[in-house]
Amino acid sequence: MSKRGIIAVISGFSGAGKGTIVNRLVEKYGYVVSVSATTRSPRQGEIEGQSYFYKTTEEFEKMIEEDALIEYAKYVDNYYGTPKEYVLSQVEQGKDVLLEIEMQGALKVREKFPEVSLIFITPPSMKELRRRLEGRGTETPEVIEKRMARAREECAYLSQYDYIVVNDRLDECVERMHRLLQSVHHTRQNQRDLIENITKDFDQYV
Ligand code: 5GP
Image 1 (cartoon, protein in one colour):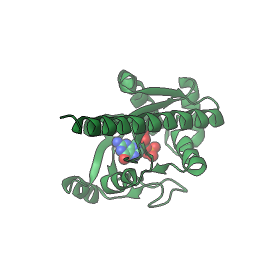
Image 2 (cartoon, rainbow, N blue to C red):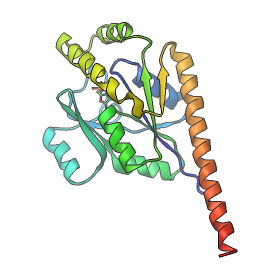
Image 3 (cartoon, helix red, strand yellow):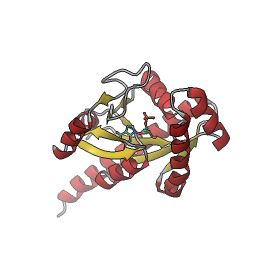
Image 4 (cartoon, rainbow, N blue to C red):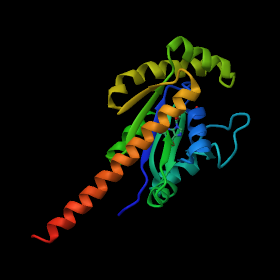
């Protein structure tokens, strides 16, 4: 029986709290998170190789050329991309891997791997979204406006997601996400097992 993990893409409006949720899922339940490459500058407290792999534009474009990324996108003036090798090797080893990426990237991952689950995290209201972005204090007012405008545009693509999860209370949201991911994992696993059995069964009669 194959024991592969799943890939779950987690997107959400910037400020929806998806980073915190992903960190909790990793710490509490042992999910693996993919570390992206980006050309944006590190924020206070971010760590190279843990938060992101920070790249120059030239370095990033070289990764694109060498086909080292599962997907990449430009988001508010910077490149972001998912290194391929790490994600695929972890899935092969049976780990469930979370990709915390924005929408264009999410849809590209689905094109390459149709079986991925796309999960979208939203705050309870857009008033709350703005409050969280401003409260974070890490972005200039101009960048906050750009991120809010981007969030409004993203509404057009929400129907492409398999699940939309409201991040109202953090602890509850983490538990809901875990149950959802477990359910996807087991459904996929059962499907693969069944397909394997049906195929083997056929081999006796064909
Ligand atoms: P931030 O600058 O706030 O860390 O991230 C900005 C946006 O880029 C977020 O929506 C985040 O999920 C997304 N992002 C982070 N890594 C990747 C990636 O590897 N690929 C894509 N397409 N988006 C990413």
